[in-house]
Length: 170
Image (cartoon, rainbow, N blue to C red):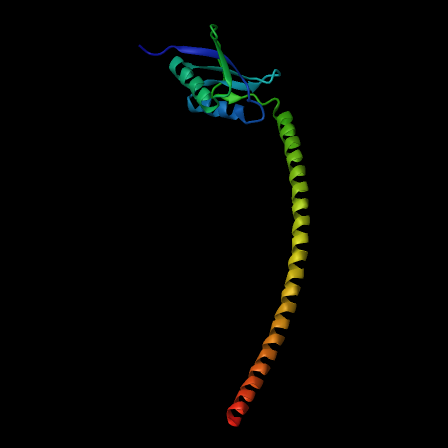
């Protein structure tokens, strides 16, 4: 006996906005060969209408629960015989608004990161100045050490001369 065709209406809520959830639902609906569509509702939930073989629909809903266990999925069987579009897709009426909201969020993040980078740049500029000062000090110390080395070489030569002279006198 073959599996029966079934149609469902599902409401998915909790953490489904601004995370690409409709694309996830669309991809799984297409992968399972279902007919239907997914869309954002004004209440912040994602709605799904899908039809296909009953076991395939059950696997589809199971997939969605596994992928995002933090969501709540409520399904209702549609008793009427309706023809849903195939292949499974998303209704994208609000995509422009969603893109604008994502851009606004991104602009806020970029503004924060720009401020952080400016602060880090200021710190790096300070550190560069300190390193230049240290380099200058090290150059001075190197010159002093060379002078001391030269003086020590002269003193060593004088001590050798004096040692020689003392050896001769003894």
